[in-house]
Length: 122
Image (cartoon, rainbow, N blue to C red; front, top):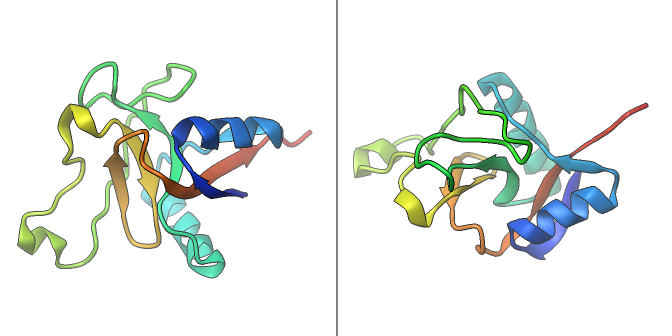
């Protein structure tokens, strides 16, 4: 589920909680690719997902404090030719987002299209 509206990470977290879920944790390239396919269908760009390296630069953790072992970074084809790699923002970019062709670190106050929520199913 994508909680939409132009929001920062705090609002994305709150929107997911209001829906009975939490920001999605993306831990594999296969999961990233599947989510990006859905984002293409709903025409969403730069949605927040769970992950921050605010505590220790380069160590990505979820909201519950679990370390994300394999952040599946991706940049658009050819971007590396221009020197673009992710993560790239140092301590000023501590929150994770995804869009249809990238998985990027950005500032947590960035106004994104929404947040990608995981819902708890009973």
